[in-house]
Length: 505
Image 1 (cartoon, one colour):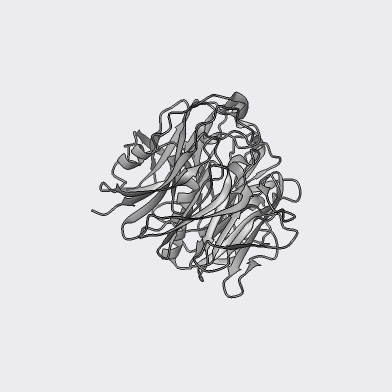
Image 2: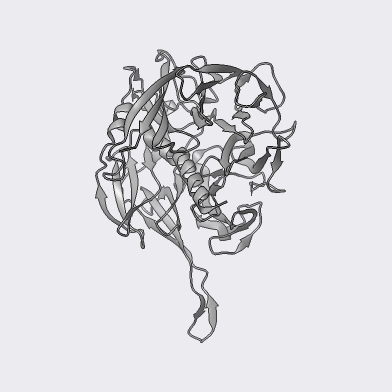
């Protein structure tokens, strides 16, 4: 894995895991960081889609002169659309899988194409309706022919006993990797597989789980459940543990990385060798040992890199007063061979430097606790850090009682220097205005705050800039509902649409 491809993979995963939830609420780019010539140069309607509540996000993938969109249609059926890039006509394949209310935003979709052109589609089963039934749990399809959505075969990815919750594909250097959780929230282990294109089989990367909850907890990883390929040629893994399905039981933010690009060799940030499976007993991997109820939130964590390719971990927790804050952490290594007061050489293993980026008075309150798809991004939002030059980093922060802001940080100390007001990116600002005039009724029990429809802009899952062109999906819906039925009246289906953005001068 070269450094350039590592950086490309990092950007791809950052867009998927960080940029998407930020764009959901129309967040803006910092003035001067976006290409001033970026503009919409094309748009294509895909299909009307279910809009009553937020489902598993649609997936957009552009490759080999074709474009693919996986989504749940207006009747909540899993559907794949395909078109040639030089055509506005879509072909459709509807799978015999229908989303139920109790799946909701957890109806995660994942889409990939292997080296031979075969199309892979997987989704999270949690109470999905499926006909005909195929016991016990897999919902994984592979196309019968390369580059064709006419016919798919339904397969087991791992074994007949598999329970592949939160299936996630990612592609690095042409190889598809696949991660899933075996078990439920608070009681699960994470596994990591690699696709063999020649044998057309999935093979386990490690002989053990990557993360083992020992039947007492489960892990929530950054980036959809897979290690992240960083700009330094390593794989990086960030996670927190959770004891039960209750969001408030998150605890123990942890980090590990590979030695080089070898997925079989791992170490702590201090360079201490560690061997998977990682468990709660790996205290050498702790970034922040916040306990249950301490404010850790599994959607509010990120890995990003400063200008020296040092990983910076961003996350939310409560401060000593109980207020919500965004923190940044970076490992500061020591000096091997340091001379102590006794004249002896010591190995200073370094430590995590943790610095608050915000000084909020905001209290998250009772909505921090609960199960199901909580409206977390309607409460707090944050991004990772971005190098801004001149020894500065920038970071987006927001809570529901304050305006969105860009925090400017000193790169060497991570201390906040000043706040800046985001400058809207014109095309993003325009696209995030709801087209539907439907007004959502507030439903406190479902954590639905009410108001206008919500809009997400979803970047291409390949994260590629094709000759100065980027692709986005525009998706409009009614927001999260804790995976419970929403009473009528309902909004009409909304149009899922692809936009072509030019960044060229």
